[in-house]
Length: 188
Figure 1 (cartoon, one colour):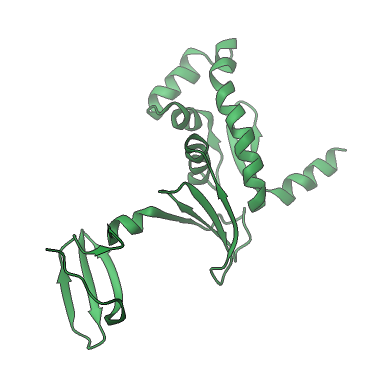
Figure 2 (tube, helix red, strand yellow):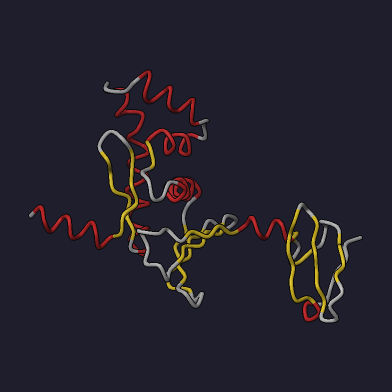
């Protein structure tokens, strides 16, 4: 039977190795089994539901990007944790967006995006893209759906002030929108 605590009595809750440690106002500490339910989900499931990214060099230091993995939302928060912007993604766009975020501050190679799009292993994707078809027309045919989907992701990412920048024959790099605009201004 799960142990439920009144929310006012709990000052801290930490998930550790599927065990919940709770501290009450009286200062006593009690261990509860991993089935501790809060909103029909265990605390460890709630912790895994959200991913937080500071994206140094891409976002201003006072902002962070929060991903809600269950609802496939991206939420931009300021230093006071106020919601600045919310963007929702279809499933496949969310997978590509998340893959791009995992590679910040470096570029995201095409094989990782290809693996996310086709739900394949990265090594298998690398073999298909690089070893079997790189430099041929087959490579463009294989990567075209990924590029098309990234163009839709790019539009949604502009709400956060970041965009994926194409790196020829390598992949994509997340850059601030203002940096991309200033480089475009230099070219003209």
